[in-house]
Amino acid sequence: MRPVELLVPASSLEVLKVAVIFGADAVYIGGEAFGLRAKAKNFSMEEMDEGIKFAHEHGVKVYVTANILAHNGDLSGVRKYFEELKAIKPDALIISDPGVFTIAKEVCPEIDIHVSTQANNTNYATYNFWKSMGATRVVTARELSLKEIKEIRNNIPDDLEIETFVHGAMCISYSGRCLLSNFMVGRDANRGACTHPCRWKYSVVEEKRPGEYFPVYENERGTYIFNSKDLCMIEHIPELIDAGIDSFKIEGRMKTALYVATVARTYRKAIDDYLESPEKYKENMSWYIDQITNCTYRQFTTGFFFGKPSEESQIYDSNTYVKEYTYLGVVSGVNEEGLYRIEQRNKFTVGEKIEIMKPNGDNIEVTVKRMINEKGEEVESCPHPKEVIYIDLGEELQMYDILRRSEEE
Image 1 (cartoon, rainbow, N blue to C red):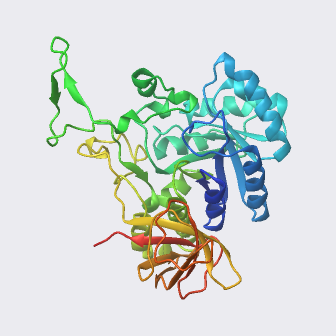
Image 2 (image 1 turned 45 degrees about the vertical axis):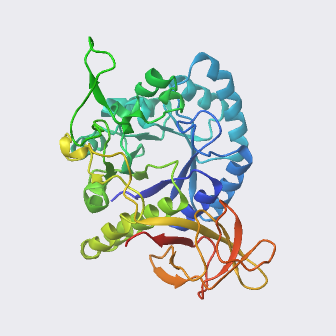
């Protein structure tokens, strides 16, 4: 059996540290340029350096995305960017463009190159081509079934790794190469500026009746005909391993620390349980399913893994997430009084019941006993975005514990 890597996204330095503590084997991040998430917070070079050092101290790898489809004007900047990355030593670069690939080989040949899903990697001949060019890993196209991935595994060298998305948002377009955003609002998805028009509401307009909108009825508001459910393969770890996939990739470089912690912790336990005992994995299935729904999601699908998706893989009546918990903050220190430092992400109050989410799988319900602000003043709540507070929950906390509030009535 090939070793299995759990690869988790991070939108910021805080989220990277949470991903590491909550079970990632590797984390992928984007810098301030040349990745496909221009609207994410992304990392400055200094933050990247700190994040890579933190991850390496915990035995976790860091991969940096540089997977835009580059235009002429991008190339000189790409070269300079790679020269800067060379100094901070990420474990790999994720690249889709052959020109960018060539520059990476010239500037930082000591850094592994992983070929992005954006490169439309749908057959073993393509994998072998990238191997001949010097790639160490290729990310499967989203359109592949497990049967096709297994066939690829059987026709490529053992030391060429396969990475596959197993959880998160799906794109309406082939391998994510979407033109809708560029066409409709002038923001190029293939250069990191996607506005996600696949999540918008659509009606039909007849060519000779401009201004007359005919809804495609799912409800009175029209239909979200491009809006895919989210991928979730937590119930199919054995099939993913059997297909010969080396890296299980979680989508979500714009997600919160709560989302990342929830998904990383759940897949970590599912993978470890299965490798320890397939029976243990089956016995704990209800726990995995319960936990994976504790973060925001758009209902779940298995995507293309078991064949072409049906109409059941789309959500037609809404573009909103299911949200069972609200993210309150992450523990980032302790003061001389023994109160724990939190940078607030959503308001909560003294006397309120909240939960502590632990990396080991425990969820501990507590009552907020006390709260003081940075001036040392007693306060009853923390209403201001990202304000720093110190709290007493009546429990001992650890760095990077997550605080959340259930939204169930």
